Length: 330
Image 1 (spheres, one colour):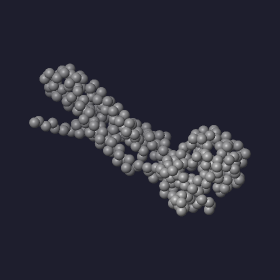
Image 2 (image 1 turned 180 degrees about the horizontal axis):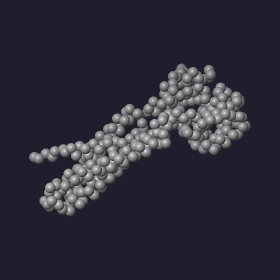
Image 3 (image 1 turned 180 degrees about the vertical axis):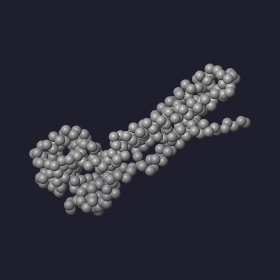
Image 4 (image 1 turned 135 degrees about the vertical axis):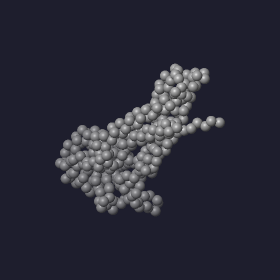
């Protein structure tokens, strides 16, 4: 039985298919994780966050809570001895860290002036006889109600967040306020009845994406690279279809209908694409083992898989259709 040999053009086609799919998947995964990476690399502060210092030392949590803009969070920097400790007070829907165990704060916790804590997964905890975990701050116990943990190492792994109380508000004169409406933040700080005179500045943004992706150049380069890869794939696919010219002509001379010839050709394209897809997806999983990004969902991967496959299949038909109209074996 005649065994069909694998030609170099077949191997090249599979290689280019797999490389293009790999880069398309990793670029989509990068886009899905870019906001999370940006926030985590900046200690969970957004680009709107403002850092400010005050001279007053007596505050009432209830008054601060009532005047805080909606969907805004106020941090009180309580860090000491190199430990990241922050008081937390918020209203409305705010960006919350990923909790692997327990829960994050609720607004009722502030209204009831409760001493609670949400801590990173690497923070050492104390345990009472009843099994309740807690941390100590200024010799006061804060019950731990939630553990922060992501599927990648972050600065939040060693962070301690505690509910802002009248007591810990007086422990520091440094605050950070964060929310989606920058105007509401400025209006809140401009109200001297809240904090009095303040000194404010934008938070130092240690976002690593600013270092590797200035002006979004990396995203444009990635898009350009993907387009270049797709064009190379189409060129190789064109040479691959051209290499099938004699086979197509012989099939036509032996009574094959045009749709039968194209059907056989499409099967070969799809088989090579499926092989390359397996390689591309394995490469994506390998990247995730190193960087621990949030993977694309199965639905997203399937949609990308089918979209690219239909793109290649349609292009192959356009290339092969003129060859089914006749010709001579060369």
